Image (tube, rainbow, N blue to C red; front, side, top):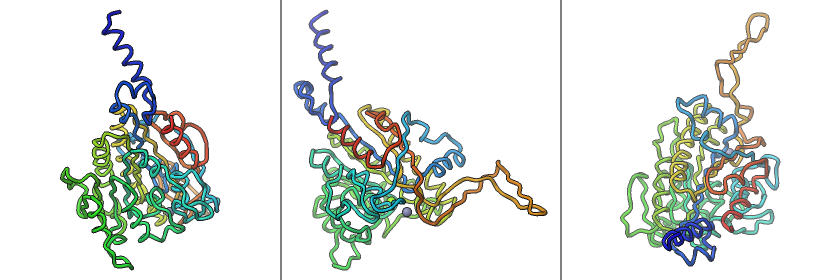
Length: 376
Ligand code: MG
Ligand code: ZN
């Protein structure tokens, strides 16, 4: 073997030992740059997306949903620390902190003590972080990753905490919580004073390169529902966030929420649920496209809980003498509640360490697996 060949074999050996947080001493000797790019996590949450919502993507889409691209599937048990049926605050706090807490809690435990979240911890280790939602960005799901308040209704305080959270990119609705506040402070000014590029019109607007933090607040509260005309905000924001975070050269953790699958369930409107699920699937596709080209990326998709007791049942007709006929070729989106249910929800994983997400487990386990992966 020539000297060059021996060198190449050694380099390949070193590269094969890259760990997620770049702590491998071997690789540090070779290239710090390479180790810094060793891992990215894209975590997509379909709020309220149970198995029937997921199934709707298969029955109401002309093409195969992106959900089919995942090699690893698990099931998550969603109960909270206080109730058999969780809300989104306790559900997302389980993902962000690994703690079961009470319904309504944002980034705090059962005793209302603040718990450091996975994104806060990674941010302090030099990772870039981002949050995207089709609700207000201060709504329970994204808030549980960067805020610590005893109640999800404290959205003014949550907005304030977002500004100082160390986040690099966020996009969603909710500028009312930054501007029209009871304390009269304009937190969009504070955002700009803290180095953010801010746009309130379109996700397509590009910041000039002098800004190293980007924020998009595109509606007073939640964005428009998809079935009433929302554009491709969710997939476009996901693409933009990935490009922005990738360019930073450090590992990144991006949280993407399809918020309104849940709202369609609460409203008991089948078309709302279905269009939001298909829209979410598009964003999932964007994340997977990136992960396919960047093999040290992990993509995880799950839900905080199921909403609506949703199902796709066959059309039922009552004939003469109360005879019932059912048409198993005519689906009727139906609901059993205007609230959430306790049904388990799917977990999909692709990429680095994805196999760890196989099985049936508590929602807090998703946090534990993230921790394990980034500590490797
Ligand atoms: Mg939500
Ligand atoms: Zn809900």
